[in-house]
Figure (spheres, one colour):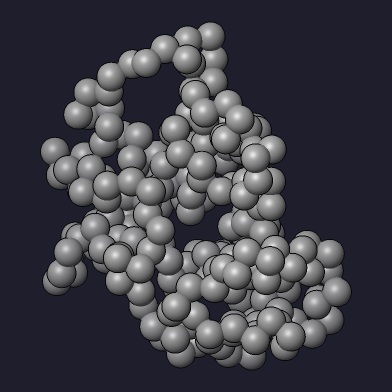
Length: 209
């Protein structure tokens, strides 16, 4: 399955949730996810009641799209979470939140996760002083993430820092010094701290059938 390359806000409209895929526009009233809060297509405005399976499927699709993960990889994350001791849904979300692309986004070095993936692949991000160019790299507690010094004037990175400062968006489990373009992934968050717009139990039930 290829990555989706169409209009990003169309995905938000499909899920009925603002997935915050566009950066600054997603936080404003200009967002089509806000202005046109109904599914795309000829019958998008029809109020269709979802079946239980349909609700579970939409929850899974929404989380996949938020984190930019394809089905095969998402399924592997679920299987990993299911094997560990604890609540599978919480562990699944913790795995997703500890991906390097998500951490770079949460630190404010990119306006969205898609841009964060691009920055990582192009070698602009260091983990504990070493270049890491794999967006799915799993960040560990107390790892230091920073923008390479020669990359700090890149417009996309400056836009991310500016947006994060204006929104005041820094999660409690991350410590960031935006002046130094550096942050520490202090700890793994609990699911109660994450802004998860769906019922994760839907995903567990879907995959457990």
